[in-house]
Length: 159
Image 1 (cartoon, one colour):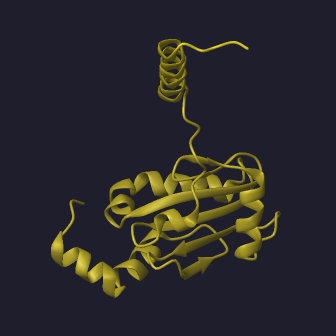
Image 2 (cartoon, helix red, strand yellow; image 1 turned 180 degrees about the vertical axis):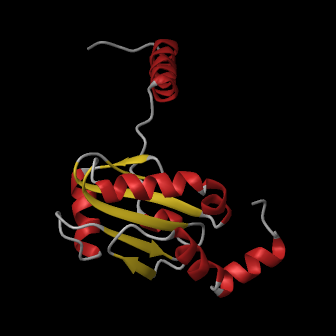
């Protein structure tokens, strides 16, 4: 029978704890994919569903968003690009294929369809457009929301 000296056992345990702690700190953390529920009561997701990355309606929608980036951000909006045949993102974070399919199913948007869906901070669908959206119309819908009225009173905005 082998006897373990108490100090050797303590050293082994201490080394194991140090190793595990160091590994946890030094290993890169894998970012979890964003979910719509992550934005509840914080942001207004604008989901842009497109068949491909180079769909002309998606390209034009992205151009319009970039041209009004300040107004977009001032309304606490985040962008979701849900691409049937390509890389999807939600607020700049990657969305895997199964999550993109789940979103398409949840909002009833076929893989070959183009649609833009505004989600309120309460998680409900507020507006749906099946063509390149007029952002001024989307901003008007948001500005008419009671929660947005409170936000504008508290902070008149910077745009």
